[in-house]
Length: 374
Image 1: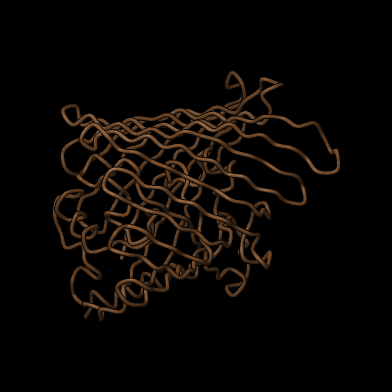
Image 2: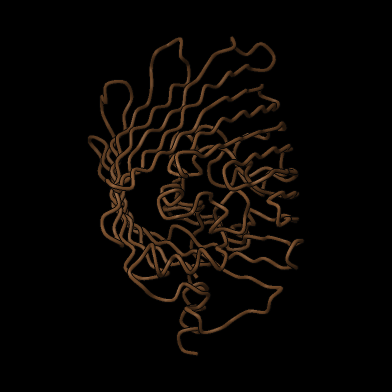
């Protein structure tokens, strides 16, 4: 009982502070016996609420033990209800000549719920807006639901859902500041409203979404686009490799953009190394002849190394070119170290060096995250 009360207090305190956005860790796909993201997550696209298999893996495969069930197994909710959540705090150091800044702040607080039967259910994520700097808006202005939708799933792997969610695209990185998320409409609180359907099978999956702008600006951020998105992924080499292709078309009052991209994942079991890559080309046209049509590039390439049962070390390079004609870009080099001591707990140290062109006046970010999931 004390543990339950302590956990609820942690969530209540975090709720007064700041939210974030978390997706699945893509390096876990293929490397830990899960050939698809939905093996561990209830959502067909991965991320968010864990299913029973995912909770079991948290204690037996990802970390060095512990009970991955809700509240560490102290309470079992009824069959029609599944609950979860993420609390994440951070200490960040930012340096860009001649300024240096150190921040300590709660980074994320999300509570997840699934209500319904085996096939039809309502999914909802509730959290709070926020940021690392004061002053913060009043509490009621910070309350937000990033995702809420109805989901119908069949045992065959097909599904339909309608509501607010991100279309399934790309690597689905947990880091919303990654260039392939930040500049392509998948940043914090940019989830649109829409309807989607797809199929998730043993060796391949396909997702098709149509979306419209959120009805109230207060609900989120980013461009108010309407359009459609498609993603197809095929796995081969005994589920140690996956290749995906994607297309997203969106229009808004400011213009239109068409994004086409490819995604690759390759796990080398003997070396314990996962390679991840995503490359996107964007055609951007501005409304009312505000400027010529131009092309943009967003790319991510990285490697993750599993060290024992509790550690992951990784490195990645990123590029964002807002106009290929001009040849200027924002590039970044990043290293990560993740530690999973027990089920429900994670420490994540991220260090990123980013700058324009040849790293003239580069910016250095070092972020230590303490993550607990309910």
